[in-house]
Image 1 (cartoon, rainbow, N blue to C red):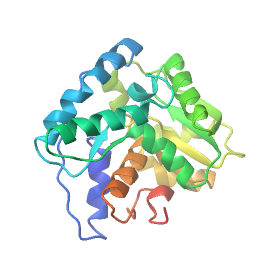
Image 2: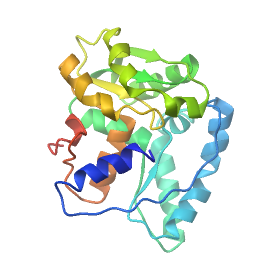
Image 3: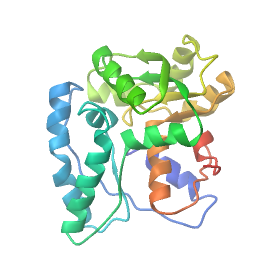
Image 4: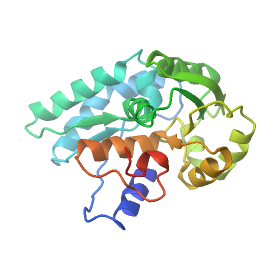
Length: 233
């Protein structure tokens, strides 16, 4: 999130007048396990409080799997609770989650059947797939890269992703989620993946950017952001 969302919004600055500043507060997590994710989510209230001191205009909860590992539909409860933290601090701000944004972004482009690439271990990836399916979206193909160390996830070369995608059955899907994780970079590979598959390609970071722009009531055209950020949705 701290690399790709700023990159997308900087790209938007080339075609739109708005300018953005970026502020972050961290929930600690080193290994992508159910236990660490649960502890991490428990830290989100503190982060929302700290960021609301800066009176930001929108907040994005950056860990998709932390939300999805907490049970079906949890992004709605999280967004509501964290928004209340900002209200109680006298600095009301809309809160979007990468989990909710991905689900909403898939639905916005009209996709009913998708393929998903995720960096997580298989049990966590299955949890993510189950969460998305519970939102009424069919996941017909998925690939778990099984990278447990969080920094190794961030270091994964995005240009490996088109080759990974080539080995997946994508002929009958409506869209591809190239990275179901805001920590795993994919932005550089999105145009290639769209050209290769002929399908809309999105990621958790692209969807979060889209959701933030919608919360700010701003046009959603971002060069290099793929189909979802074409401005049509």
